[in-house]
Every structure is written in C-alpha cells, then in structure tokens.
Length: 357
Image 1: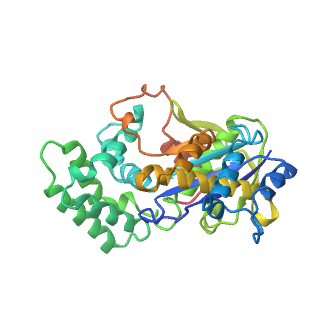
Image 2: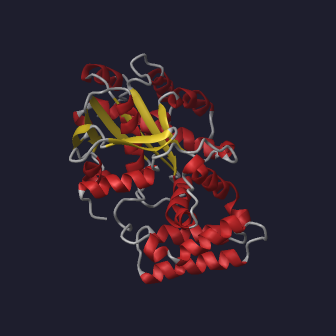
Image 3: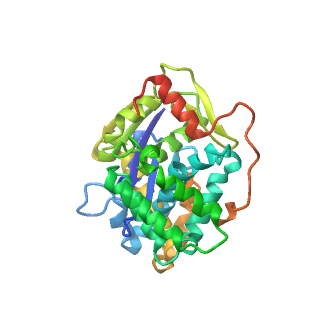
C-alpha cells in the first residue's frame, strides 16, 4: 500500500514560535491518475503546482479547496491527518520527561488512566495561575532551551527558573509544584542524551501516529513516500529503527492509546512533490489542517472559510495532540495486567533492536 506524506508548520524543536503555533502532518493513499486530476484542478495561472497558501488567499481558491475536501476520492480510508498544538506538545514533554519520573519513583504510574494527559491539560490551562508573574513562561522557555542544549549552564538556568516560580506559587498546589521542582533538580540525569536527537520534534510522533492509523486498516506492508523534509531526514535512522523487524512484534500502551511495533513500513523514501501529485494533495491537506486549527486557537483569524473547512478536514484527523479541558478529571480504566505504557514499551523495543540512546 503506497502512502504519501507532507507536513505544514514544521519548526523542529522550536515549539514556541508565535507565528507558527500548530504543526500538521497529512497523508494520502491515492492512485496517481486520481491525484493528478485533483491537483491539476487546483493549479492557478503561473503556478507549477497547487499550494494551499495561494489558494486560501482568494475567494475562488477557497471555493476550490472546499470542493477538494468534499471530493469522493478523499475519505478516512484514503486520507489521514495529525495535528499538534506545539505549546501543548512542549508541556506534554515537560510532564513526560521531568514530572512523570518523580511520580514513578514514588510508585505512581502517571500513564495509568491517562493521568499524564489530565496533568498536561491542567498545566496548559492554568500554568500561569500556578506559577504567576511570568514564572510559567520562564519555565517553558528554560525547558525549551534544554531540548537543544543540555549543558550544565542551561540545566542550571532551568532549575533556577523553576525554583523562582515555585517560590511565588500560591499555596495548595504542591501536587504540581513539588514534582516539577524535584524534576528540574535532576534534569541533568532525566534529559541526558536527548538534546539534538529529534526526540522533541512533533513531526516524529505525528508520523508514528499516522502510520499506526494506516496499519490498523490494512495487513499490507506500507510503502511510504515523504516530501523532502530536513527534520524528518535528520530523524531517518531513528524512524528506521522503529521499523526494525529484527525483534518480535508487540502491542504497547494502555487502553485506547496503543501502538504496534515495529511499524509495518517496508520502504521509506523522500521525494519532491513535483514528482508525485499525491504529495501535492497531502501538502494541501496539511496546510488546511494547520491553518484551521491555528484559526481556532485565535478567534481573530477565524473566518467563514475556516468554519466550513474545519469540519471537512476533521473527518480525516486521526491524531489530535491538542489541549482538551474535558479530559481533566475524566480518568480512563486502569491498564490491564502485564501491559506497558507507550513510553516504556518503546524504550524496551528500541533497546532490543540495539538502538543506542
């Protein structure tokens, strides 16, 4: 089965770019003649290929986009999209890398019942209240720097930012303040070896999530073509490790948050969109998803076009790394005996393949 991927809003580990707060990854499985027909109907005079930014800038282009999204050739069976709020993604990594280990030492599995999701949503919604006077933003900025540089000075600055913010935190929120303080104090150990590996690039997690969605719908091996992407190319060796068939296949995760490793990808290639019209359709879907979610996050950018387009795009979305206040205090069932979290399961899998962390 041939799958074509493209992305929009990729800033790598720069997860605080106010101009691009959302990342989207789109994929399609279309015959070349179908994709070419869809793409050619969108090309405007003077263009070599259809581009979402140009199309969305005019009324006629917007109408053409809506017609594309309504095309019978595009359905959940032929198109799959992942969207990521980068700030929420950053906070989720803060929980995963610095806070979850503190709970783990105390014998508490933060992944059980999706409590890590609840925890991240509380911080996303109320971080500035828990850590007032700019303390929360300083924590996020300092943590973001450690994702690129884990030198002693940067780690010390993170600890200092957390301690200063914790000092000003209102009473009664120790369950959020204390674990973060302890995590920051041990950040050198907890973050060791992760900086610069692409571990914190949302494109990697989105790619895995979308591949998992394709895998769930077919037993065929997947032949993946991704539009040329420096961040994805940089992470190619890691991705190929997740596809390694040298170890036994297994399902990891809890409840409805599961994944199968290795990923059932037989080939992974990178190509120019001019060579594959399927990549052009994926590019347009990714651009539309990023634009619509960005507009949703900022009411100032919301238009009637977004109001019409978002429900259509949403039918293709298989993974939402987005804040959801409704998840707070809505616990899932505890994991089945013998199951392992996505994080622990992935680490075990990679260790078995011989991957060097």
